[in-house]
Image (cartoon, rainbow, N blue to C red; front, side, top):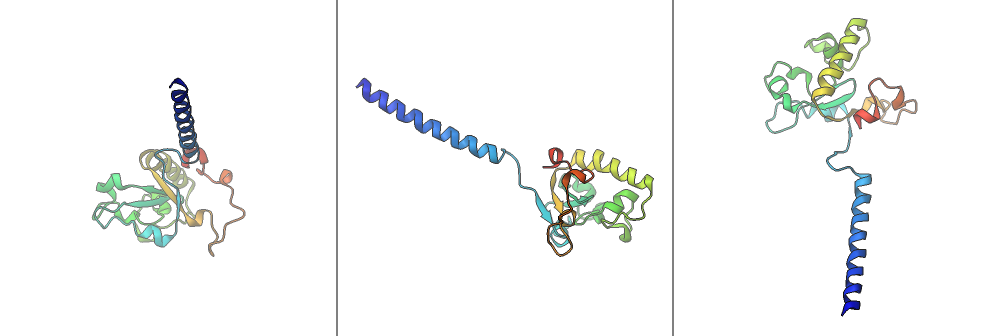
Amino acid sequence: MQAGMSTEFSSLTINTSIQICSFAQELRHKPVGTKPVRLFTDEDLAKYHGQEDGQPIYMAVKGVVFDVSSGKDFYGKDAPYNALVGKDSTRAVAKMSLEPDDLTFDTSGLTEEQMKSLEDIFINVYKAKYPIVGYTSRRILNEDGTPDKNFKPEDQPNFTIKDEF
């Protein structure tokens, strides 16, 4: 009887060890509580415009897409900053503007002061308060959808793998 218990115990130990190793392998490749990062085209991002109850509200700043749903009072339907959502509003954030012409990713022609303001708001408001859910596709793809071979994460402002992925 003792030998039978020993065999049963060994079998249980081996099965438990295999299960633990399998679970550890899963954790190594997919940390608990993380969601995959995704790329958003302009059309994809436009779906998260804050006009529908129960839908997430997304906006991009500097090509980083944030879930601003927790700020529904600011970004939701009929809210003061709803014009900024569903798109990359980098220029508008830099200029603190809600003008239709400023609701774009284009930062050309911004002053040094506006660029500093953009950086401050990007870090101290958006990155500090809202989860990152992805990136705009133009950040790493060419206009035709092919990968930009010149894209290097380490050369991108505020594209730090440690902080954003």
